[in-house]
Length: 156
Ligand code: SF4
Ligand code: SF4
Image (cartoon, rainbow, N blue to C red; front, side, top):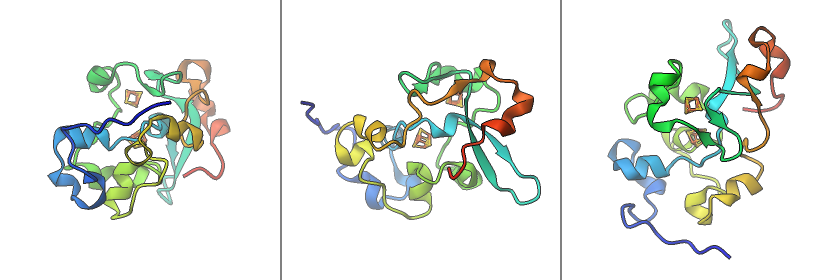
């Protein structure tokens, strides 16, 4: 059985009401639920601006750990990777997954009960079937021109 040890760097329930721009760096990082959905390749409809997620992940995404394999270097290695900050969340929230903790907080919504900060374990995001662990194809496995064939229906 896993036990949850509160991190002393984080204020209690900081994810509920504290505005994003007032979070400390450790709090900001802890807000990520570890779902990996933002690392999926996406298609944006030029006319409607609608975002379609595919089950093809960025080449640096490790679908076993469900994390970026080069997190510290991500921006240098993948030009299109967006390093989310309190300053740029407004510009980026629209393409983030609807379940993303940053997007939810930006929109003034509560986190879901499966969020590791609430459940106390990172396993809950996998158990709730939110994470992309073991569910993606790698970028090099598909022909990027056929990306439309990999759109996940009903996924936002
Ligand atoms: S979608 Fe949001 S919560 Fe999920 S991994 Fe990406 S940044 Fe973290
Ligand atoms: S570089 Fe890393 S964080 Fe950025 S999209 Fe790719 S896997 Fe995700």
